[in-house]
Image (cartoon, rainbow, N blue to C red; front, side, top):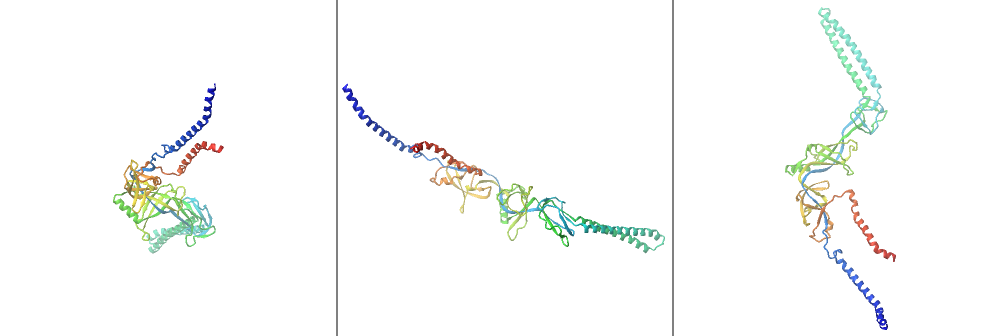
Length: 431
């Protein structure tokens, strides 16, 4: 028994010391493990970086219409000045200013009393002339058998016949005067000569109109359809004709009836297609411009005469042309360049020949082939990479107004990662 008691006392005295040594060893090993963790594949310290993604478009040839944007001004297709064609006092206005009127609609009333009196006077004159004509004809008819019997002289008979013809002429003249008087009486009701929109009244009730000159009362304009007048540089017209003759372009179908689009002052598209009516045959010597006119429908009356607009006119087409977004092209004095991405992710600069712009895209005539990938987005990411770094080509998505929500993804991922760190910080808060 004493031997057993002596052998147990050393084990009790050394067990705390051994526990302390074991705890220090474990902490040391844990610290070494944490220091080596970033060097593993998950930490990114020793692994290779992934290839940066760049947005590309795959080009393909197609026929592209050459659209020229020119300043223009709208004009009413028909303009009628409503004037007083007979003198008199203006009694009443029969329309609402700024409204749409029909052809033949009553607009103004002029005092018809003097005109009615003139008509009655003409009727009386006609009746007197007709009575004289009856008397003269009767005298000529009575002289006819008498002259055959030598009861009257031939001179008296000839005078009677001439008097009858003169009376007939007086009847015709007075009949014409009566017709004129009736027409003037009809002018007392002033009507619209065309259908359209009428402006403000230029005279008021009680004004004396038509005295001497035909007084202008109002203006009616037909605004459906409208004309849009614009000018194009004569040099651009010659350049286009030479390019067509050289085979670079082809005429748009029905050039004289080519379609046009109108862009309003706020930059919005009007939405109705117009057609080109004609181009002037002469050049303005003071400006060097050629005048063109197009017709644009205006069924709702949204457009008004005199409004300045931008006209998009397609005058020709490029065959087998390639279009790329404008941001993909770098324009310098040395030329225009694009970045081409090969199948293995290598980048190369390519010089291209630019023709014109259409819908925020450049029309490329030369320098690219069908199926090649042109870099559009990702240039800033490549600035942080060493030269020659291969890239990963992904299809480029055209930005849209709704695309503003796309950058919110990183914030969402950060918010998702925040709860993962909260358990580690929780003990600190409790402390």
